[in-house]
Length: 423
Image 1 (cartoon, helix red, strand yellow):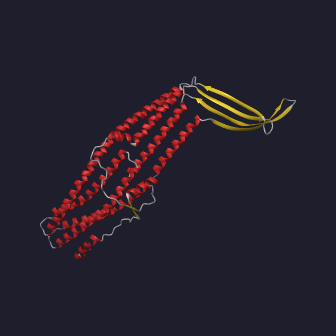
Image 2 (cartoon, rainbow, N blue to C red):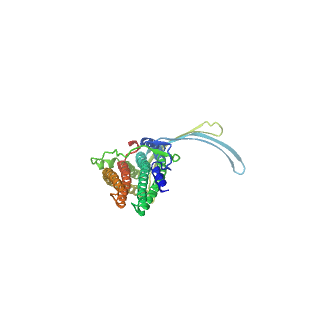
Image 3 (cartoon, rainbow, N blue to C red):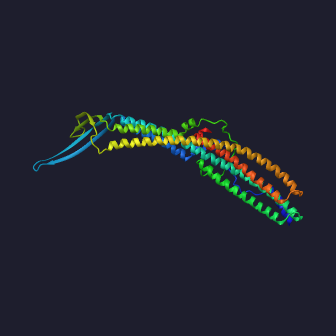
């Protein structure tokens, strides 16, 4: 039975059944970007926000144009003074119009504020695109790492299986103690568990990627890609320029400009409002009316006392402007710090990949030598199992370092304010 078990272990090293859900399609990064740009609900929402701002600007600007209305009035009435009763009908139709002539430039400032709000909405769309790109990239890298994690878990299972087979042979020959055999069996069980965990990680990562692509119903996915960092960060960039061009800063800058126009509009409330009006009607006691009626007029209104309403409106507008200016400075300073930090972290991650690759290569070579020494009795089990554990750890650490470098690259691109179109 022992010999049969050894044969089974050797066989399972190469034919371990996988529970990984097979993907329907393998997607490149560019394909994922295209799908997210087309389907992501956050981008659709931000685009509708632009349309709302544009419509608001048109609503505000409509006050600068003539306002023309048509009217039709039909009425009947009866008078009774006690002795004589009379009934009469009245028919009237016509048009009336009015035109704002002067309001202290309040409406013009409101229109200019609305224009700045459109710019802010467009920058919000860019900011949303930046955020979507980061989340999409993280989901892509996570799935890429999970897929590779399954392969590594299977490799580790093969290593543990071979080790168990070798230890069992030595144990049967009386060259190894039972503790070594039990340890090897436990290591194999752990390797089997790690395969199951890796498969579940793939399923979760597939769901995450589908969500960030805006296709939550499509979860059986795979990705094609490598772990190469493509961003060049050898030279330190100008963080102040990058911060100034970031959409989150540009959005606040537009909001500051809008608030500035809002202050001017609030001051315009103190100015008189001058408007002209005209109307032309036909009136008669029967249909169709024939009597002409028309009028022209000018009206002026001027606030006298409103309990301090307009003064409070000015103070409110000024406070909103000062608040946005403070937010603008805070955002700029925060962006510069984030750029400095993410740039440094990307440098660290790239260098760490190189180091972990060297460690993995050295550990693999050491494992080959140690296995040969152990098989002929030149190394104890305790020393050999430490080397094998280091090999398993080095494989996982190298994969984690590669994925961390890609995520650091994604964070750096996000800190620069790059949108989906960046790819």
